Length: 335
Image (tube, rainbow, N blue to C red; front, side):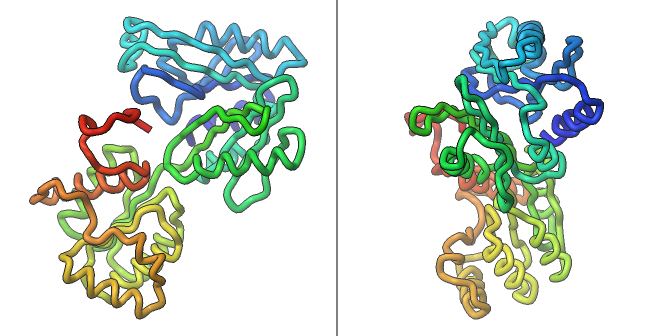
């Protein structure tokens, strides 16, 4: 989403009268990109990409109608995409998508600043005649309003769960009799790997496949500096067995409430490590967040297989799922 936010900032600097469109509810079509966002200006010029271009014609028409109506702030379009059209555009399958088309000028600029700089942010849009938008950024006052402070406070609480997971997420919710579209964007997850080894290289390759970032550190100073930059969207995996490095690294990550904290080592090593963490003031609640030994029980033997097991556990933890075979579940597949 950072590329899209940078493009938005360019268009705003050019003072273009424009709208932006993005999917807020998708059925089918397969995985979607976090960069799924289309800009359309008053002359019908477009920037970015949405759904492989399959809905561009309809979205350009909607953008023109919206910009011509000074009393309207958004359009919500339902778009059906058939199988042939979808696969020709590189999508997995056909399906349906609700696309929210909105004026750029109606959204506080703090949203784009946050996303462009790699910080989590949420946009809440009030549907209906009243309209209104609210930007939520962890640690900052909200920007904009949905009409009154009470509704703003309740809506802010609706955004918080979407900002605990990496990538983009959206939901349509009702607060009383008010319907809202809540969208959250988190920066690309960052994995700090403490300790240089073949497994560190394998983990770096594995997270690269997911589009994540990885940093390997080998000294205490570099490790603590890297961890100090992390958020709840990020991860730390300690491969280093030396307590002089592993203990301060784990303590810092647990106290900072990094999203996933794991440590390699036998069960005996884990017991020793936990006693060392208790000795430096890590609480029982903080220790309960430590995944040690790190990874799922996949029977991994090689560094590459172990990297898969660790990343698989990270995905399960971050999505709040239990790591069981899909055939043994009956709930929704996917997020």
